[in-house]
Length: 239
Image 1 (tube, helix red, strand yellow):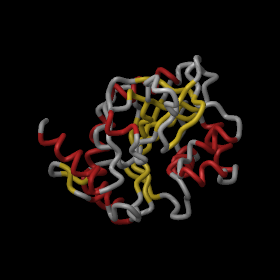
Image 2 (image 1 turned 180 degrees about the horizontal axis):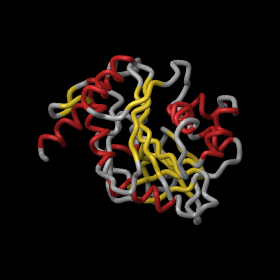
Image 3 (image 1 turned 90 degrees about the vertical axis):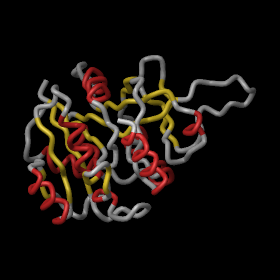
Image 4 (image 1 turned 60 degrees about the horizontal axis):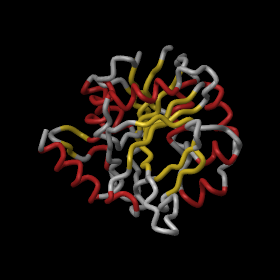
């Protein structure tokens, strides 16, 4: 199974401006992500997909493979789709460009989800820490007995009505797609749930496309805010 990783990286982030170029232990955020993803030996290639000349120039100067993509894309998945039109693979792994703590073990878990040829879309989850259960920046996911995602939400799901202390699972910013799933995704309009939660994976679910979820014990922190960045920096200091 030939798998390539694509790291969507745009410069015009809203909550944390120019976050892809923020320093993380002596390297830009995008560089920390690229280096982490490259350490997974099961990947045939790793490509940064950007709409920024500044990010493109940085990647080329550092020897990180990068490709310019359209500035009109509404989501990272659409950016991955553009790459899939020019580079052939069995599976395309989408690693969010703001996930500097991504580990090769997480990617290996995701690739195992995709070993079933019938699986069109995969992702990963981990047990949610106490600080993430009510945090809207930490997306929660609930799955069925076969590992298919029932729903993703920024809200705390499932709701603990009777104090039964359910198991909460945090969704990590890693996806895997087959080409057919990407081709269909980009033809679908933005869905109502996707618009409400600002979670692009809900477009798949709202249109009847299953997402299979693997579980990893390794947590990660997506850098969406200054607070997230400071948490990541503290972790890097201990390494």
